[in-house]
Image (cartoon, rainbow, N blue to C red; front, side, top):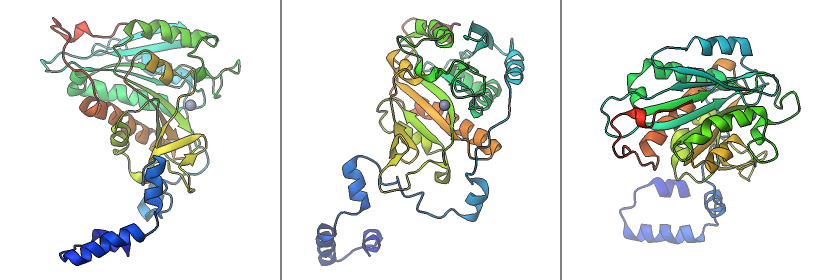
Length: 335
Ligand SMILES: [Zn+2]
């Protein structure tokens, strides 16, 4: 009834008055409640809607079905990038168990563009059992190499494989994504710190790729990003996004502020450390490990590309060239 009135057209002033009166009398619905609690009305909506048949076919979340890959396979792929089109491949250090930590740089190309490229760092496979990340990260590298326009707009570095040992915690029982803080540094996180700290204040966007045993893609931001996370998630079909099922906007430890978007800052995360390093935009992206593997990787890559595109277009970044900079080399990444 109320919905019909809201959507309807009211040419008669008296009817309008009656409608306003009705609004005052009708008890606060879920929408008003949601607003007063600071989460968006779309949270809790997707889960209550039945999926269409085509959505069910594409996006059925079931048991965990991880993307199958091993460290040697990924290393071969990374090594094959050496020397390709300006790509630089460096081993920035070794983990506590001897595993090489690779950094792949795809420097921006100068094309006479008016604004400087966006400096982006992507990381994946910091949790050894979350194999969707490296596939999506390497997918982004492929995209960058095929797309001249991408190279003009983004200056990209990718840390593809930080812990390939197959379990969430490393073989010593350490969660590497809590080891970016005093007292917890490991060989892996120290190598990353050494490599990225010289760029303090110059990284615009950091994205950390993960997988979770939940029913939907989601994004975790470390700090308020205005409307950016909503824009980023706008690239995904709503049926693929994580939603709350109860009256509260909580999914496990995550409080959703809009469909598929949470804010969280656990001490010692890579994302949190990048915020300390001055990155204005820092995100964790989570793919549902409960989706068919090919859909996980395709969805993750889509979400990742949307994160870059929306940050470049709508992020509050100073994109003016540094004074006197004649080329992107000025800001080009260094290993
Ligand atoms: Zn993870």
